Image (cartoon, rainbow, N blue to C red; front, top):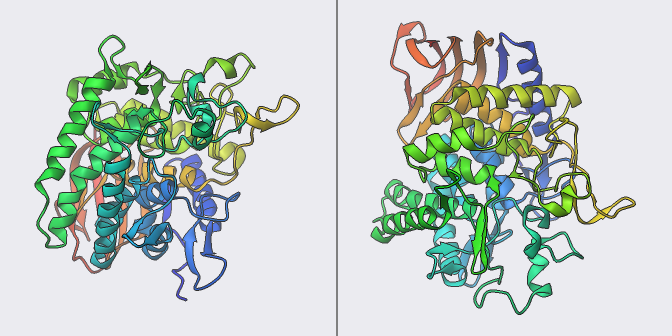
Length: 476
């Protein structure tokens, strides 16, 4: 069994707190790379966090997408493959069913980082097999949407009272407590959510690109399906009165709570148009510690003097997506805000915790049914959570350095927040190259770019080999 060198690219910059937060994130990630599975042929994979002994499908996808596929491609590949399942129908994506297709987004990011066609080919087959199942079981033709909970929202604290069984914390248990209300096909949870449908739309857009890279004929219905999903999201979720997308709906009505991840995905996946993007970035509520996973928390938690584990609380991986959405939408101040928040939180506790309190910034597991403590509602925040750590990596790679990956190479659109002054990342692997990247100045207007001391465009081809240094200057 071959292991990659246990090291991440080193970061130096004009802010020692950012340097330290980055090192904390790196330490949490390296500690979570462990051999898996316990028996048989073991490979190093990234576990979901210190309190987990297995990878999770959505965590695997997000962590690879956030940059693990670039810094540790072997670990990223084996983490992605570890959550696939074999059946009589062929290879498919395992894990909790509703947001499993997020795995395809992680796979595509891995391919852009590495150019690994063999893994892309396997993943393309898994995607096709999985989508056939979900189209048959979970697609609702009446709404033109896929049924299922929100991305990451496996706890009932993410949902209004109708979806709280009362005696359990898992949303998957809802169907056994409400057999008369379950959907006729599939698993049975009747809700349709913003984030999950944004992911499906993104996946259908990616499939033709994957087919093209593999030399396969694209299926014309993929683009048509993606567009129909986008139209259905606009029709059923957009709320002109609030200037935001609603959170979820079913045949009984809708919930107008604000889903942080859903809005970030709507912008990053091109679901929201320019006017909607501007409205979202202006109107989405921000707590003193950034965008909450869902806002506001539901009354059954507020009445107990707290916030739901999956509503009202701060999940750093969501804040990183929101920060990038702000940057892409012309609101760099939102990126600055979230980077500052995570820098403070990670430094304060010397770890990248799973969840934080939205008002105090304390590590906080939130309230949820079937919990602990005297009230039976208290939950703990898991320690050294991998996707909290890769959130910080994403903000550096895709935010500050502005790396934009395509099959033919990587483009750069850097952005330096006020007060940072400069940032340098050394020993960053990219396919056959090892990169040192430096950006200095303030703002996002690129004024100079040099590769190995020579004037150069802000683009590095996928076939680049050896060690190279790219230096960029920006101004407002």
